[in-house]
Image (cartoon, rainbow, N blue to C red; front, side, top):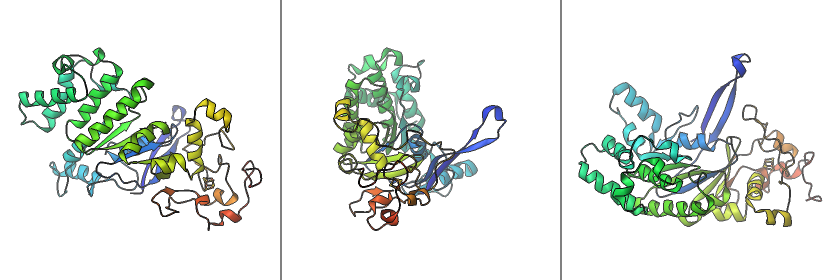
Amino acid sequence: RNVSVHFEDEQLFGLAGSETVRAVDDVSLDVHENDVVALVGESGCGKTTLGKTAIGVQRPTDGNVRYRGQDVWEAKDAKGFLGGGGDVTHSWEEIRRSLQMIHQDPGSSLNSNFTIESILSAPLKKWEPEMSEADRRVRIYGLLEYVGMTPAEDYASRYPHQLSGGEQQRVALIRALLMNSDLILADEAISALDVSLRAEMMDLMLELQEEFDTSYLFISHNLANAKHLTQRAGGRIGIMYLGELVEIGTPEQIIHDPQHPYTKVLLWATSDLQNRSEGVSTPPVRSLDIPEPTDPPSGCRFHTRCLEAREVCTRECPSLDDHDGDGRRTACFRADPDHEYWESEPLDGAETEESA
Ligand code: SF4
C-alpha cells in the first residue's frame, strides 16, 4: 500500500553530493492467491524495484508490504530483536520461504560448482531439515520429470553449464516452487531465452501455477509476453512509467482498449514492423526524451511526452482510478469525462482534436 522506494544516487566521484532516484512512487498493488500480475514498462520505470519490494527483498522508503495481512518488515524487525519471529502472525522465515524469485539469467543464479541435485536440495535442507535424503530425492526427481527433464537421475547429476538456457530456467523455476511458495517474482525470466522457447516456458509456468497453486508477479518490457501469460490465467497487466503505476486491467482491456497514452506507446513498440508501416510509423509521443527519475516532471509525469497533454496535466497529478466501473484503473485525466482537462489548452506539440 502506497509504496515508495527512493535511492540516493552518488554523483561522480562524490563531488556533487547525491541525488534522490525516485524508483517507485506511491504504488498500491494487490496480488491474490493463484493470481498472475504482469508489470510492464521500459527500463528504469521501477518495475523490478517494485517486484523486489513485493517479495521482501527491498525495504520500501514509505508505505507497507503485507503478506496475508502481516507487515513483511515488521516480521523481519521482530526476528532481529526477538530472535524468533516475535508477536507476528507470519514469521519472517515463513514469508521468505513463501515469496520466491527467478532471475533473468538462470546461468548466473545457479551455482556452477554444484550439481542440479545439490542446488535443488539446498532449500529443502534449509526449510525442511527433517526430510530424509530419500524423500528429497523423490521430490526433486519428480519435479524434474514433471518439467520434461528426463531421465531425472541424469539431469540431477549434471552441472548448470551442462544444461541449455531453457533447461537452466526450468531448474530455477523448480527451485522457486520446491517450497510450495505462494508468490514467485519472475523478473524478465524469459527474456534471455530464444524466442522459440519463450511461449513454451510461459506455458510451463502456467501449468505449474495450476499444479502448485502459486501466483506470479511477472516483470517484462514486452506487452506481448505479458498478454500471453495473463490471458490464459485470467490475470492483469499493470503498466509502469517513471516509478508510477499508470494503468492496470485485464489483458483485453490493456491490449485491445488501452486508456492511458503511455500504454498506447508500449503497444506501438510491440507491434511488428509491417503493422507499424501500415499504421503510425513513428512512436506516438511528442518528445523522445525520457525524463530522469531523479527529476520527474511536475503534474502527470508523462506530460512531457504525451500527445494528448493539456495545460492542466503540467500542474495536477492524476490518480489511479476506475473511471468506467469495470475494474480497470487508469491515471489519466482523459479517462474522466467530467475533468477540467477537457476545457484546458493543448500543450505545444500535442494533438488538437483537429490534428488528431
Ligand atoms: Fe497525457 Fe494528461 Fe493523461 Fe498525463 S493526464 S497521460 S499528460 S492526457
